[in-house]
Length: 96
Length: 103
Picture 1 (cartoon, rainbow over the protein chains, first blue to last red):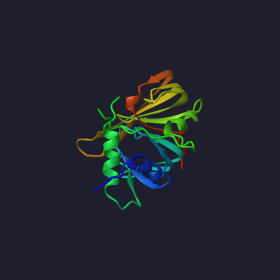
Picture 2: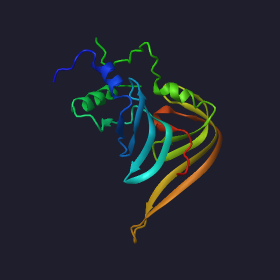
Picture 3: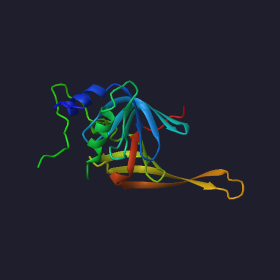
């Protein structure tokens, strides 16, 4: 599992625009298109839907999720398993 | 010592960070979801990178679930209160969005 040097920035550019599932450590699920994210794992999603057991709320436009909520964005279309854990480590190391 | 935190490099096309997009909501009404089952609806006056916020004309909703001992049914209770001006500490914030439209 060799990661190239540019992988962090390349990865961030790569997954923007993809539909993602963002799972918070509270158990709530957010599905939407990834509009942007930053080095603190703050996330902006479009067309977001919130799932707790069943579907609760619809958010149209942008929804911002704070990076420290233990979320690990996983990609619908992503097949490489190394990407998910890598992003998780990045957010985990942020200390305010 | 090498820091493992990687800052996103700004390239020639300005990619807006999520915080830049919050800036577009300044002076607008927003919906904030917080830890401990709390929700806020108010007008965003100020924010920072920690998501500390100043909200005006805020309505706070606290949702609790009570379980009836006998019937085991879940009773959802929500308590609301209005606050004219409020400072929100950023570490309690989970999500920020434009006010929800009933759909």
